[in-house]
Image 1 (cartoon, one colour):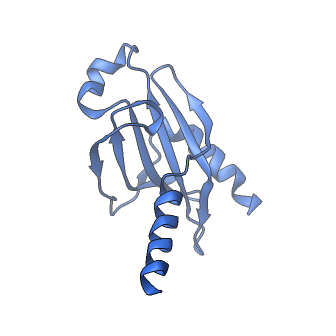
Image 2 (spheres, rainbow, N blue to C red):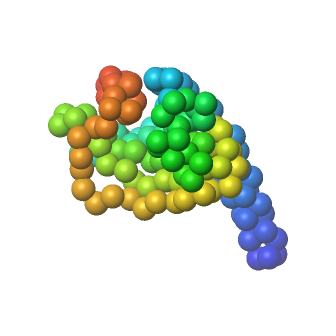
Length: 137
């Protein structure tokens, strides 16, 4: 019976891990489009808002070669935390993906950062959306 329970649990975890995410578009600049997973949004007791973000890059963009998309990948999924009061950002880690919209093989994972930094320009729209909807929780 224990083996059946473990098998059922593993099957459930595998199917939930592979479930498709409903990415909501947040901003676009011609080089990239940033999306967020609305279901991933969570707020800590100290007011830090964390979301899963997908950045999908346009390989035909003039910036693509200089940015090194051929080596990095065509999309990136990152867990990002925002301090809405102090306008700060911290990466909780993520990974570059081979294909568009977070599909394909992971090309280059990266770890979480320890410190906070100013919100990068490419996340201005995400910061605005996440922090504007902070009061909705």
